[in-house]
Image (cartoon, rainbow, N blue to C red; front, side, top):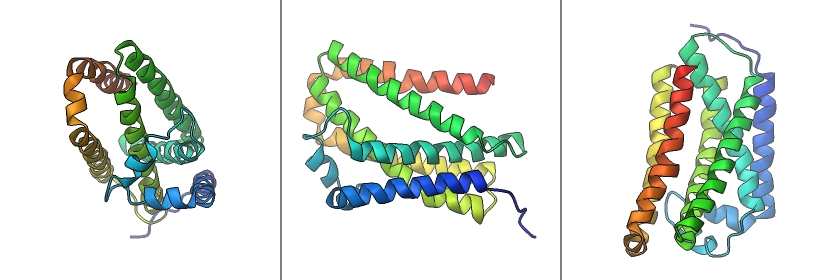
Length: 214
């Protein structure tokens, strides 16, 4: 069966931007990128760089752009599979902007809430770990998206499986962090549970309900 040929000019340009972002991060932060590339194998990256982190990091910012664009492409493919027809590729840019705004606002609220609960140091390392694993998933999504766009016509089941695998990688990374900081979490367990309910569960439920209504 011959695969349907689809104009992918906009997506190709987005892929080029993503490759430029990755190349820049590797060029400017060669050693850091090398250590970062082994994030799922060991937690050396988070140990080395979590203590010296700043609120705005160029390295994380560049990879965050790649993450938002690739997440938007993947969401575009997901929507296409759900509606059963091709939608405008320009929507990818809208999705990327919405994803970026969601994560930025969420981080700001997380920092505010951690200050209110007086668990800033704990949440600071936790946010760094989350950011690192999210950006790493952005790297993984780039080749996956390229295959789904140019080689394989994805169906809904394939996209769900990929989503679950990504969620598993992300969850294992957080579990590693929790295990390494278990004693610290125990001292602030009540406030951390409130934090999880308020900013780790509720926002995604709201987004799910919004998408479901749409």
